[in-house]
Image (tube, rainbow, N blue to C red; front, side, top):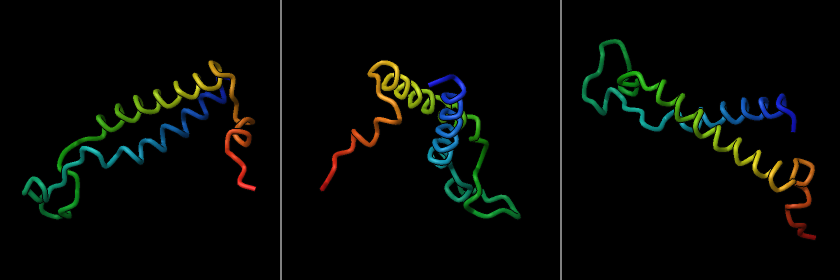
Length: 89
């Protein structure tokens, strides 16, 4: 896998992980008991985006590292996926 393909896979993995990890660690205004006038109770209380971006980048790097380990270390590729899944005929 070339570096452009790896970068594309990292981009897709990063965005997928971002939407999975975004709600973790989020505190709402209702949980803190201080609702700002003009906002809903479910609005985030404070900034949490930087922590979510750092968490997302670390998780995406681990996933892509595992992908590199499987493809370069063990010799598997995306073409081998149909042979890994068992056939139920």
